[in-house]
Amino acid sequence: MTERGQILKGFHPATPDCPPVEWAVSDRLIPYDTAIAEMERRVGGIADGTLAERIWLLEHPPLYTAGTSANTSDLLTPDRFPVHKTGRGGQYTYHGPGQRVVYVMLDLKRRNADVRAFVAALEDWLISALWEHHVRGERREDRVGVWVRRPDQGEDREDKIAAIGIRMRKWVSFHGMALNVEPELDHFAGIVPCGVTRHGVTSLVDLGLPVTLADVDLTLRHTFEALFGPTVSVAAP
Image (cartoon, rainbow, N blue to C red; front, side, top):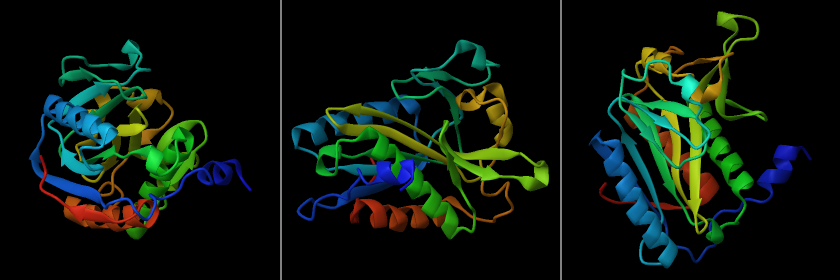
């Protein structure tokens, strides 16, 4: 069994007696500080047993975030968009319209308290969703996220299509993933995305696929359920 297979053996869906995960989709741009405050509230409630687990899909206005490993030299144009320091893992990333941000607030104690297995499961979730749109996403042992080979752009070219950055509190996850559907790719030029200089950034539309956020939301939901268990629709915050 590969190392990745060994890691994924540590991940399990929620136990059958767990309630469905709430599934919320915002139809407006959510300010970053608003989203952080709501996640903090939700994670506290999940940890103390008063609130349900939740997946929250949204878009942000254009902004950059700096994770706990961010190097200030990777912020190339600091005055271009607001910059938010955040407690998630990782380095600099961009969020903006046309990018599906997925905030993942799950209690790992209901599955398995194994962060590596959880990140591998998130990568598998994204890869499965991309495959539904006929895109072969791949993971890399030395780089978190999901990557797409671009032989049309050069023999060794590969671009990042999705980023992952999570934080844990009392084994409850928050922050999450960002999948590029149709963002302005030029906006990534103000940073070195995730500290990686040798590769570029792409999106589903950049790859020639005429898909919408609504299309992607459908595939994200049923591929999530295949890995993590059932969901129930709720109103977004």
